[in-house]
Amino acid sequence: MTPITTRILAIGAGTSPITDEDRKTIMPREVQATVELYLQGKIDQWWFRADGKGVVFLLNETSVEAAHEMLEAMPLGVAKRLTFELMPLGPLFPLRILMSQAAAATAAK
Image 1 (cartoon, helix red, strand yellow):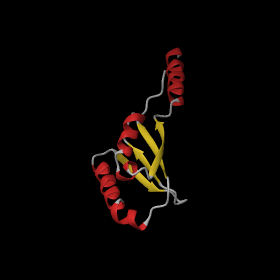
Image 2 (cartoon, one colour):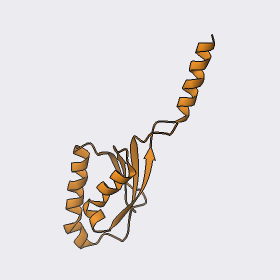
Image 3 (cartoon, one colour):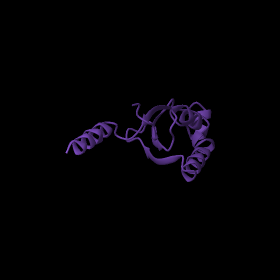
Image 4 (cartoon, helix red, strand yellow):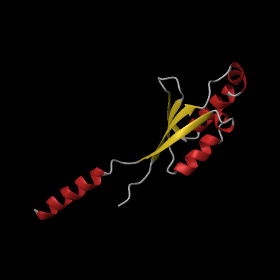
């Protein structure tokens, strides 16, 4: 059985430092786009990376392709200032094995 994807972990890294001009022009639109995606339920959680190199989003998305399109459409993505490593996440797959073993043991009694 193939594991299912229920979330995407998006680890963002800046391609170059944010300039003062970026802070004035791009960042207000980026913040607005991020909040809008949160309000739409697309972004579940977000964090700033402690190393200062970008952001991390937990996305309510089941497709890496859809997550990539969504992030590339954000202002920093359009400006090619932020790239993402996308990691599909799902329920803890080994639990299915344990549940199958438990069901088999119960049925054997």
